[in-house]
Image (cartoon, rainbow, N blue to C red; front, side, top):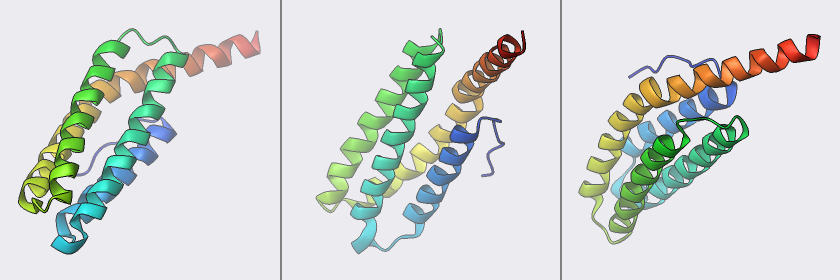
Length: 131
């Protein structure tokens, strides 16, 4: 599922990396699954942290709701990662697929709104620099 770019470099690059990890997760052998899931979890955590830092920097009004969505997704992924380490690969694969769908929706809605506000903030900063 191709995700349209948002026009914010760090977000677009990170989203591409996440989609790459999700593709790898869907095809990795069972013996490598737990390690691949752990790599996905780290990538997601780092991405969410970077987004939240950007939201704090611009005092984004939707930060609480956006952060809550991140926390819920991370919680589900952490639980699935623990289960994958215990050998429950099928459950991990299912959660990986569900997270892929969630991520697509999250990017199209929450991240699109954030990107719009970030672009506006950047434009305002540029306007101030010219004055």
